[in-house]
Amino acid sequence: MHLMVNPEQPAFYDLDNYRPEDSVGYLMRLILSSMAHGVDAQLAESDLTNAQWLPMLKLHQGHASTVAELARACNLDAGAMTRLLDRLEAKGLCKRIRSETDRRVVNIALTDTGREVAQGIPGVLCTVLNQHLTGLNADEFFTLKSLLQRMLANTSQAGAEHTPLAFLSQSADCAAAPLSSTPSGTPDAF
Image 1 (cartoon, rainbow, N blue to C red):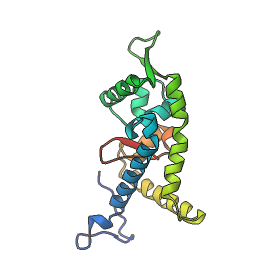
Image 2 (cartoon, one colour):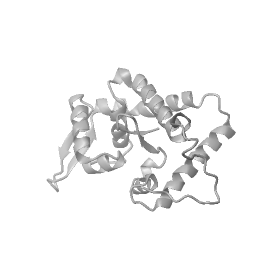
Image 3 (cartoon, rainbow, N blue to C red):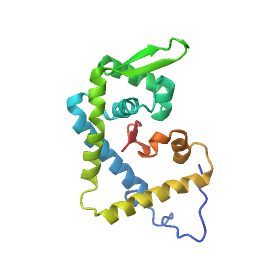
Image 4 (cartoon, rainbow, N blue to C red):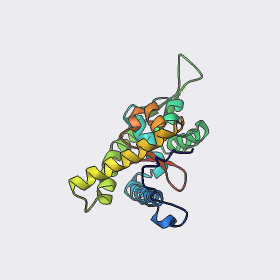
């Protein structure tokens, strides 16, 4: 994807001064990685990994009910979602139910244990987010959020259908929790 740069805007990076450790993208990656580790630590008792909590939350909140919907909502391909669901099913957290009206459709339902685990996920996310926002006042928090939203809006200038905003518009439930990828390549929403 090639983003158009407005010549009237300052160029914050150029070849003469670019250092990866000073890159906003690198800093965001470090923060997301730290958040993922925090979520993993908080969810250790539930035996739920960072890769597994998002589909559990999507199912619990009713944002998806089939394998295909869940794959789209989590920004995963069908094969990756199938493998992830295999692990969740082996843990007794969800079950697959073939549709009675269309045998090609596989519905996903949380088990009682899965619902109990999923109910705790928002609290874990709030705890981890608040830990990372420690030291910011309300104005700084809203400024940070606004700046990140502006950066995200800049990606729509490319007009590509695979920009984050295009993905979010396809799955409105993700709008409250922007997606990214951790170093392991699993989707995260914080």
